[in-house]
Length: 369
Image 1 (cartoon, rainbow, N blue to C red):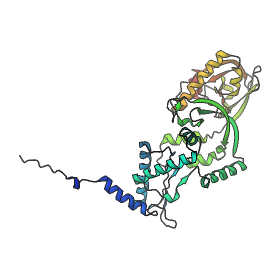
Image 2: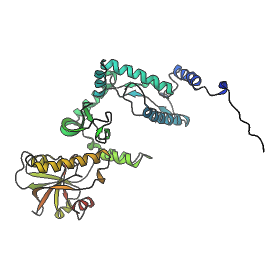
Image 3: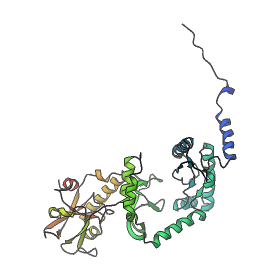
Image 4: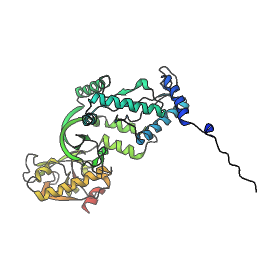
């Protein structure tokens, strides 16, 4: 039986990562044009942009994973003959940066810029193929002046407006969070800080004015995960339908005595068996002002809805609600239908009120059942 021979590499023969990486890092950094997009080129164009990091002071492994994927894609397209634009920048504007500066007793500008310098050094050590000549820093006036210019154009065109709306509020960050930044009811940055619901006046953009074009262009996103495409469709929020007024029996206060429902099937209105309101509908607030028992039940519906939003699947919620004790008049046949508050009705969809037609809608049937 032949003897097994083992070969042991000497220290000098092993791959010396530190020495090799330092050598090539110097080479890459000595030539700023190495990863720059060609200004005049007949090559097909390709743009790679990863989400800009918040300059917290140090990269973590989540950063490395994200930017390594983008780097691999950029290099792959370069090797396939594309003229690749691959910039980097810093999401450095906003209250989190100011709060961090206060906590560390350092002026915000100084705190932010020193963090950027440290993280940029780390990125260069990792060898990411960025065109640093196109670096952007969102807290510098050279960048945000164009944000301001763009916003003014939106405002002048009637596309930016203010209204009150429920928001996710982190008392630690002292700022508003997107639904995606709420994890298990807590802030994504401060995992032990419960997120509060507050009603604040804020700016909105009328993206629904471009809903048809936005939805049509989603079809061009070949290879994108279906979950992401659905998320984009929900954000765009386009729906075709009609507004119908149901007169509410009795007076409920300043919100008025009419419930305006949104329906995509006005032809089924003769089969309406109830009117359902979102838990955060203004009329619900008036109805529960003096009914503490009803208010407690509505708060429970709000909590259920919030939890379903956190996991990103409001459609899978166990649909149920509470009867308000009120009735509304069907404007087409004069029938009185009960008014319910339902946990699956969203205030930011349509008018926050629907008519329930179990014979023609699966969700309505599930609720009625």
